[in-house]
Length: 324
Image 1 (tube, rainbow, N blue to C red):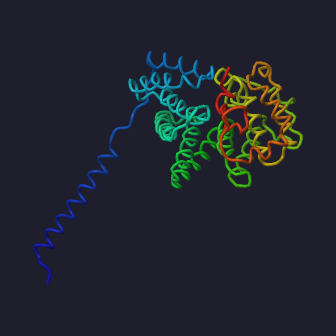
Image 2: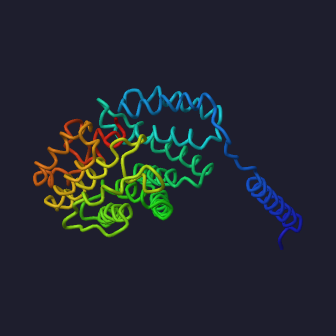
Image 3: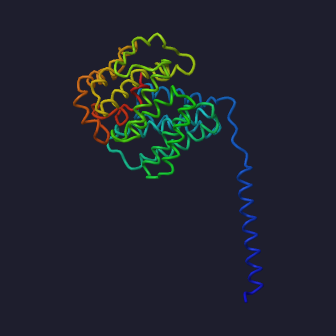
């Protein structure tokens, strides 16, 4: 027969454990949420200026200084959604263009973890801005891939789909761009390419002719207002239009459709800002070398210089759109 005292002790212990577990749950669930700041501090505004100057000048080497300033602003006001997002963006940029580094170290991958953290903060503080959600998804996918964490990868993928639903004109590009690094014969790459085409459809309000994608007829739709402003160039992304067609052309080349890619690349020339775009010579070379680049883009890895890799794996992965 079992010892009655032992049974009683075990029962009491189990009861205490259950009570403590319940207390832990209640304590965590009832903790007050961070409340978004209603205004931005002077420190944040000064850090913003440095952030934009660094990004618009394409000064990758100055990211650490901008990171220090933005992080200091965040620590002063950790409920400022935009500051959190800017810190996250600097981490994304650091990771995306790490091919610029003379010798990238393993710790460069930590930028994915940090980007995810800060974009999670931004989304929690301002869930109305779907751009934050798209960047959060990108960071989660990068983190999941780096750490071979399938759960995080799947969470990132479905977060990406949610971001597309929330703002298709912006996040269809984000989604497709993220998938551009997948193998050309993979379903994820094919989905990404389809998302780029859908992005064009969303921007112009009709289904674009995919065999003769002459964008000239749509240039009259250019705007700086509303959700469709992200389809065109702006102060934030002075060469967004050119960068979009550079990436779509690269994805088509990778898929093997290099002749269609040449037509897509050519659309980048339609915007007035093309004349001042630093990467115009690179795009011209893309058109000339489209057929040869089919094999080049099929290879994994990044380029150190010369644009010998797809935009998403290059030294201009971010600045092709954002550098003035």
